[in-house]
Amino acid sequence: MQIPGWLSIVLAAATPVLAFAGVLLGHWWTRRSERELDAWRHREETMRLLRWAVERAGADPAESRAGLATLGALQSSELLQPEDLDLVVAVTDALLEEPTEAYDALVEDVDPDEIEVDVEPEPSHTDHSHTDHDHTDSQRG
Image (cartoon, rainbow, N blue to C red; front, side, top):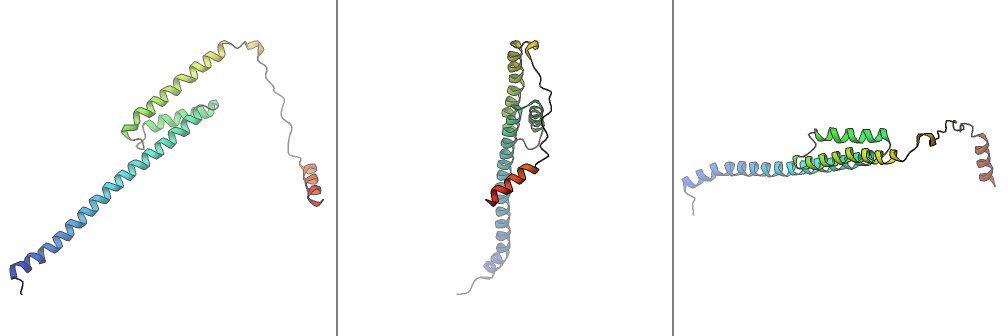
């Protein structure tokens, strides 16, 4: 059985067209998966930064400022997904309100005359000659 001429022409023309369509479909599918993965990575990094900033905000004043600055920068970052913006804003607002209320409650009960400040310098720990000697003796025995 012989293939008609018109069918061989159609097959010759359709094969590269179908191959090209398959490549386009594969490329589209891969790009879609990459966009989803990229959004997931952004969200993961956002939550990591959010957690870090909240931990810092509850620490000493310098670290607290760093945490709040991170939250502020995160709000305008392209890393932040639009659906996560409300969460970051709510956390930032809560952190900005709470320290003020907690500080006011602590300050109400403090009498400034009762505050003592220890200004003695700590002893220097630069001379380790006797401790190294003791350590060496204990290793020999």
